[in-house]
Amino acid sequence: MAGFTGLESVDDPASRDRFLTRALVAGGTLLAGGALLAGLPRLAASAQSPAQDAEIFNFALGLEHVQAAFYREAADQAELDGDLLEFARVVAEHEREHVGYLQEALGGSAAAEPETFFGAATTDPDAFAEAAITLEDLAVAAYNGQAANLTKGGLRAAATIISVDARHAAWIRAIVGRPAASQPVDQPLSRAEVEAKLDESGFLREA
Amino acid sequence: MTFRDIPDLALEDLDRDGAIREAADGLPRSSRGGFLKVVAGGIAGAAALGRPTGARAALAKGDIAILNYALTLEYLQDAFYTEAERKGALSGPPARLTEVVGAVERAHVHALRDVLGTRAVARPFFDFRGVTERPPSFVRTAVAFEDLGTAAYKGQAHLIQSPQVLAAAVGIHSVEARHAAWIRYIAGTLPAAEAFDQAKSRPETLSLVRSTRFVVARPRTKAAKKPAFTG
Image (spheres, rainbow over the protein chains, first blue to last red):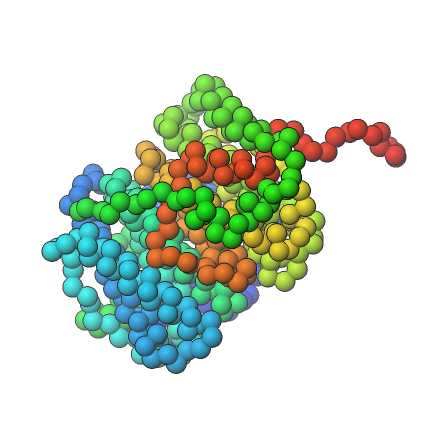
């Protein structure tokens, strides 16, 4: 997975996770409460509107398209086995439904599916797990980063998707034996940060 | 933009594995009802007594109530995992999860209490009646708690006024979903059973929690007998 450092520094995930666990357990809390919540990046809150919802959901649709294409390819090639293949098949269906939901909500303004390229990430177990973790974490951070910009209706709709992507992120970690949720709060990312990470992934053909 | 209606969950949908029901089955009903009194009293008290000072003055009344509701659910999770870890009856993946998730839930409690300051609802008393010592019951109950936590945060997000509180709530919401998937994997059940997770309202969540009878009005341990040794 050259050039795919993604969201996490995973030089030695096992030792990093052990460190996190020790840090968490020592003294009962990872961070002083104030720091935990006050330390979150301020969400760029702009006046909510249906037009802005459409813009945000088109951004989200792009991410869902990449996820859907990734799992569809993995499920079709079926080179993975056991838990990984089951994961790919179930999640492929979820992401397909997410795409369909957003397309239906956006109607004629829905953005076209981007061209993607995943290489060995849809067939090699390690590369697949790494890519899945990155894509799911990225989607969670992207939606969370837009929460304050969505209308109430838009937020309610997004929230039904966010936690499913978070479940996927934990599920794939559990399969490969990593602690599935070591951070007390998921950090949001801005749209520009998400787009930069997606570019870094190399999964977008035209980027 | 139009969104399809999102129906609320039925209890059976949330409690997919029957863990909450099972936990409540065959147990004394004496402690029933304590929980809502504790919560309602706490929220009302917090709103009445809340004399905002400093940075906390910015919190709207509705946000305070939501934060206290969240804090109550976090107290429940914190107590559950902390007790499980202390009893030491778990091993393998459930023990590992308890260590990590327990620390996260304690961090949530600490953070919410810090944000609320003097307006934080008091910690209720809990009685898990041995569930934390029986691995299969522990796992099923943890599944139910984490699915419930996820659905409960989801039901509040759009009601929050402060962007800061919203950032915290959505960041915790997705962590609860991660916990739910992790414990479900351990339980051998699909970590993400549906493409869309449904929200639960506050009354639905509180009534579900109450049905477990894990929240009691007073500590169970009574000093009925004199200690044998008081040295």
